[in-house]
Length: 116
Length: 115
Image 1: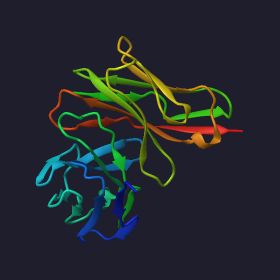
Image 2: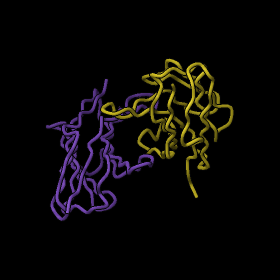
Image 3: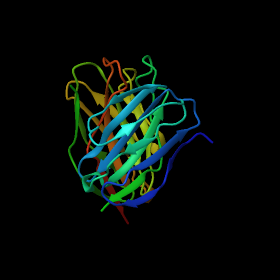
C-alpha cells in the first residue's frame, strides 16, 4: 500500500532534549516536506526536499533540522526543543519534479509533539 | 508572493443541504489550486485540484469547485451534505512560476454537519 509513515504518533518530551521524528515513503517520490499545524494558522512549511541531498527552508525553519540521505526517508530533528514547538507535525511527499509542480501531496497521519 | 484566505473558520449545515466553503487566493502568476480534507486524527487527503484545464473541477465524494479568475476565488461546493463530510477543509495555492514545489495553505474551515 502506498503510504507515508511517520513515527511516533505521539511524543512528550522536556525542553532541550534532542528528538527525531521519522518519515518514510514507499512511492519513490522525489519531493518531501515537513509541516506544522497550529490552531488558526493552518499548515506552515518547515523544510522541504526536492531530492536526495537537496533540502531547503520553508516558512518556519528556526529550531529544526532535516536530512535527506536516502530518497525514501526525511527525518525531522529538533536539537533543543522548546515549548513553542509543541504542535502537530505532518510529513508529506509528492512526485514533485520541476515539471509536476501540481502533483498532489500524500500526507502521513501526523505526530503530536508536546514539549514541557 | 502568493496567499490564500478561507473566509469562514467554521461552517455548520444540516445533513442533506448544500455545502459552500469559500476560498480566495492571491498569486503573481497563474496558480494551481487544491482543496484538501482532514478527518480527525488523520493526515490531509486531496479532494480536487485545478491546474488551468476546465474551470469547474470535480473531486471525490461529490465535491466540486469552480475557478473564477475575475473574482480570484475557488469555492468548494457539494449539493447535499452527509454526516461523513464533517471534517476540516484546506484551500491551497501553488505558484507555478516557482522553481520549488511551494504550497501555501489556508487556515482551514471546519465543517460541521448536523441531523
